[in-house]
Image (cartoon, rainbow, N blue to C red; front, side, top):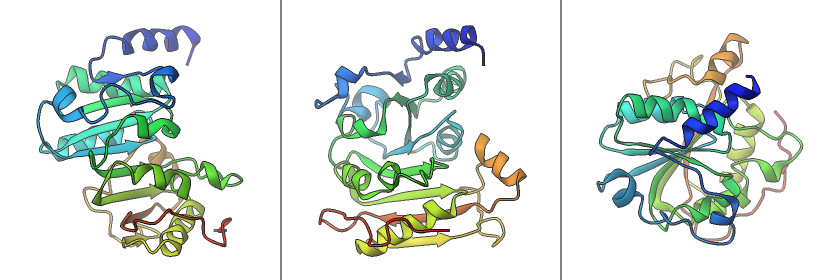
Length: 236
């Protein structure tokens, strides 16, 4: 992508009402203005809100919104040029239950209030092989999510990384979290239903390489502070 093309997308992003782009000052150690008000200010309904973290171009967020019109969906990513595609599609197709938030996931607590979110999707996040604390399912992040995910809310992890899948499973077991489902190869096992067979840009690339796609669903149903498992590295 050329610099001019990226700048064009950044300018167009400013015109999308479904895309919010807080500055660091807006979310650093303070609440963003829409925290606790997503239903009333953005979606104008009381439907459950589902968040996709690291949404990239928004393929999963868009597909889920079309599959479940009775729910609201927010895609979160820091890359404005990627978010442009999802926000443009949602705008051009008048999707009322889609929004995007450009921010670092480290600041996610500033954007959502207690029990405001019913589900979280993490799709093809960087597995961070050498930096466990950067993984989006590390206890540092799970403790943040617990502040806004409903008590019975579900976290969905879909990834090509056996490392991230196995690590997350160990985190769940170590912290006595309810694991609803886990599968090391959803396509090979024939368990890729309509929900799981939504394909992102990256997933299509991984499948073309013959990599198995994994899935895990679990709950943050332990009120204690989450801790890292003893075998923090967890190899594939």
